[in-house]
Amino acid sequence: MQNYELTIVMDAKLTPSKRKTVQETIEKTVSLLKGKVGTVVDWGEKELASKIKGKEKGYLVHLPLELTPDSAKKLTEKIKTEDAIIRYLLVRI
Image 1 (tube, rainbow, N blue to C red):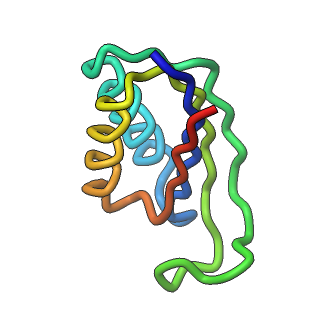
Image 2: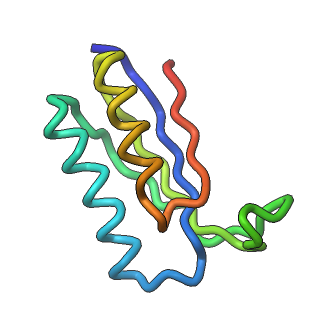
């Protein structure tokens, strides 16, 4: 198992319940991949430095993770299918 940090940017116009659903989906996926999620940090709504998919504002959430390298690839594939996520960054630390 290796440590990773995942930061996701969601559309700021999403409802709080939809944001929570996306976050829970990621946490559930990590659990299914036999990984662990640390303390989730909600960075809130931020103005983006440049537009991403036409959006000027995003909602950021930071999740420390513990995964195997294969699980990290599978998580990346799952994140790419989430329409609510406009950008993500998964870094091994």
